[in-house]
Image (cartoon, rainbow, N blue to C red; front, side, top):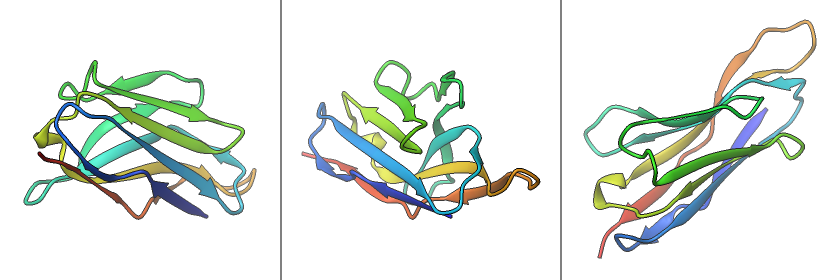
Length: 120
């Protein structure tokens, strides 16, 4: 099982980026999918999470600016980031608990991280 994240880059303050993270491999079921971020010198923090049913939850710092969504058929989670600020600069990681067979348990998987830099 692999989570492949993409979409990071350099953007000016006020700009937008869209991150994608696709799960691949032997997958029976995916639980909630989320995005975390880690800025230099700081701990990794939750940015947003979306359940398999589509319910969402956001960190206060991104509420109203970021939107998380998922396509269950494509096994992909997205993070639309608008009105970006310099303090949003971080490596963004996708995360998902995944079950590889009907009799198994959910195991936690992480993507490789994609760098978002917000700077003029």
